[in-house]
Every structure is written in C-alpha cells, then in structure tokens.
Amino acid sequence: MRTETNDGKLISTDLHGVIDYAAGALSYVVPRVLGGTGAAIQVGNVGAAFAGTYAAMTRYERGVVPVLPMKTHLALDAAFGVGLLTAAALLKNEKPLVRAAFAGFGLFALWVSQNTEAASPMERAEHERFIPSKETVTV
Image 1 (tube, rainbow, N blue to C red):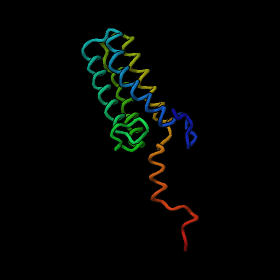
Image 2: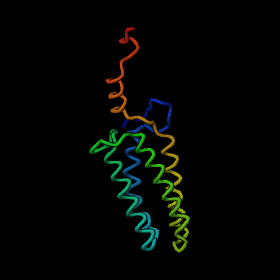
Image 3: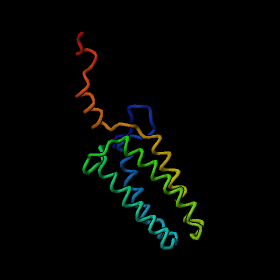
Image 4: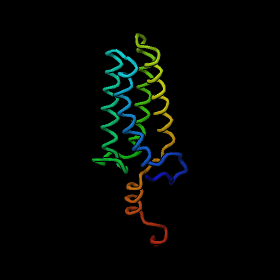
C-alpha cells in the first residue's frame, strides 16, 4: 500500500481507499451492534451504500469503475460527514452511544476529506500526459 503523498497531506489516496471501504462496512455494522433502532439502522444502510458506491467509482488505486475524480470524492466525503453529524443531532430517540458513533464517524469523515491528497497517481499521470512540461514548450 502506498502511504507517501505528493502534496504534503497526511493520507495517500491508496490508504484513503482502504478507509473508504472500512467506513462503508462500519456504517452498516455499528448501528446494529450498538443497539440502534430503525432510524439509525436506515442511516447506516444509506451511509454504507453511499460510501461504498462512490468509493468503487473513484479514480484512485481502490476504484473498481474509476470515473469519479478524487476532488469530487473528497467533497462527497465531506457531505457524508455532515450527514452523519446531522443524523447524530436529529436522532434524539436513539441511544446516546449510537448518536456518539455517528458524530464520531462524521467528524472523522470531515477530517479525512481535508487530509487526503487531492489527486491520485492515475489522475496525476493523465494530467502530465496532457499538459506539456516547461522544457517542451517553445515560443
């Protein structure tokens, strides 16, 4: 697994992909394990489907059908985080531990979205192929 980044961020796109699939699985499992009711389980189901789908469609090392740019993926991560924080705030009939888990996942998703490199190696290679280097430009 590639851990170094090219823009000074803490998380490589490769590691980010691993985090994505783990987040999708945890979104599904955690509300059930913590005794969440129907609403929390539905949030977990939707979160798992959402995270898993856009992870599989991202143009990074872990993408299955890589069509979604990494910058768009990171924006979706932020939206995912806001959605989980919103669920934590609105699901007042859920156990405090379930709400805390949603809040923690939401904060983590926001943090990850801000600390992951913005372009995958695939995207950087494509960019370099279409943008000539300074050495090849003549005036």
